[in-house]
Length: 107
Image 1: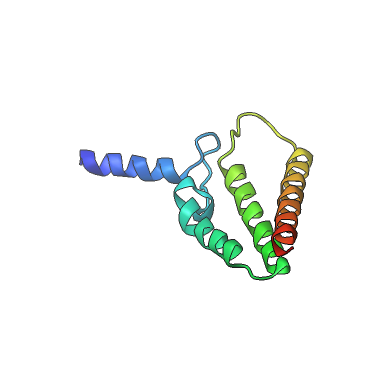
Image 2: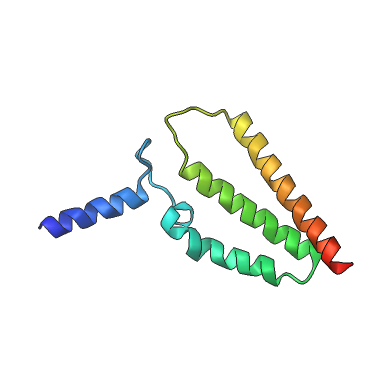
């Protein structure tokens, strides 16, 4: 009985947000980072064209942003405007670096 209780506690701790009590979707849990983000990273590395690299960089950055959002400190408020600005800045910098490195390597 004691083991079952500890197992239930472990599962709920891994799947529920500690501040809000909401269920964190599996792809955005810390335990789901490698199985869900791994294929994205492999696709980024295996990209043979610049458009494909930019697409996978955008997907990677979007996944990272969602992992950060779902695992955020929800006790301190952040406006949707600030979240949108942060996401746009992260995606833009990621795409600029990916495009810049891709162009540099091709030359």
